[in-house]
Length: 321
Length: 268
Image 1: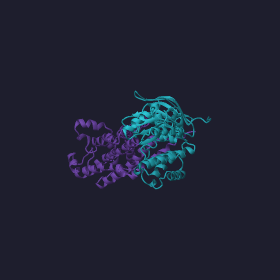
Image 2: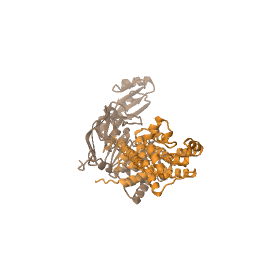
Image 3: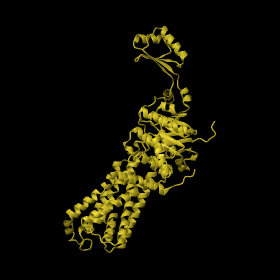
Image 4: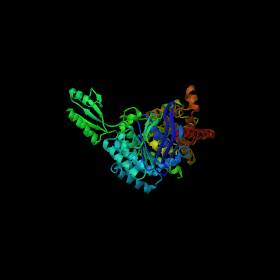
């Protein structure tokens, strides 16, 4: 399918802290120029994977190739090829946005003139021109995150790791971050991101791996994963218990919730089957208060493969102590 | 892709970063000046005569006719260096508690550069504060009597001690998990060593228990060497070498300890 070597190739990655096993034999393969999402609840080990692949911490076992370099033999080669934006803001709050970018340019040895040019270009691209002269500690969460990503891009890395790039951002900043990630990939960069937001993985990723308790429980394209989920359903809510009672008799295949007066009728959401259902509702003269169509999404996948609903907790932290 | 290392350029970049911090937020760096200046005022002006009288009427350290301020000033210089170690220790701990060091560690930059930037930055800031303290001491009557060579040796010793203590303080700062912890963990250096030394009174005037500690701790021999250099008194060269050896030992231990803490757990 693709002849170029993978950007990231991981086999049998293991890591434990003391007697706590954090990663239990992970295999990953990320093709060049694609977005790979590592999806999982809090404490699944996502951050640990990123920290290991970005040379920040060592693995206990596993063969790891990033940008063609073996992690054990040549971490410096990997460092020269990657950019990392971690979960916690990695900007120097005492320096201005512009100074942060120029510092990065200096560390990439771009030269004075080119460094200034690149800094100006990124301030422009990330909508930070006005804020560029202010200390980064005065920035809002979204601005800090943008500066953080801009700093990662100064050296034009081929592979970018983004650890929960939108956690804690408001919806608008979140969408602009998605937009930026799409632009990066359009430019040929490989992105490995972690997220606990299923819609984020669905929106951005070419391939998704679901991580749970240090194991990969599913891996594939968003469409492949959605096929793992149980089918969709139509949710019917009733106002009156009498209507609910009639509906239960008319739709015997439905799952019932007597307290909420809700029925879940298995249905693939197609126009044809929807029309059939509506016809049965009409025939039985049911007074339906609310009808919602639920097509299988990654939430269902998550539930199906991990046995637990997707977490909405926002402050994931895999401690590295 | 070959990865060329740029030790000088990377260290210079980190030094610029730290100097910019110091320049923009001078509170922490120059705040360290507060204690030595207060001590100069307190002991030089307020207690000076009493101390001097109690110590045998201006005959200190075997040399007659010295003002107390001349006896005091060299120790106060070490106090400036010692209290100046707070800022790099806190700075290093702050770096570690934020994401910025994680970023640096995932980049192909010269490994020791991040900490070396803190150290060199603090050496420069400390040189400035030493100059200010010397000037202030002279306003209060400090009259050094040193040749150019003595001055150069004295400066070399002060800078060497600053370099050594800063590496050590950074190692301590990296050990502490929090910024508050870092400012506490350097207290033995920034308070204990300058006070339990011959800064204020000569060794002979101390009770025996404390005297034993004071006699063998590094500050005492360094203060003694400095005092002889700055006041142009004949010097026992053994003390000079011992002072130098202390600086080298503290620097080596501090450097390797700090690097080890910094690199702990990351890919080589």
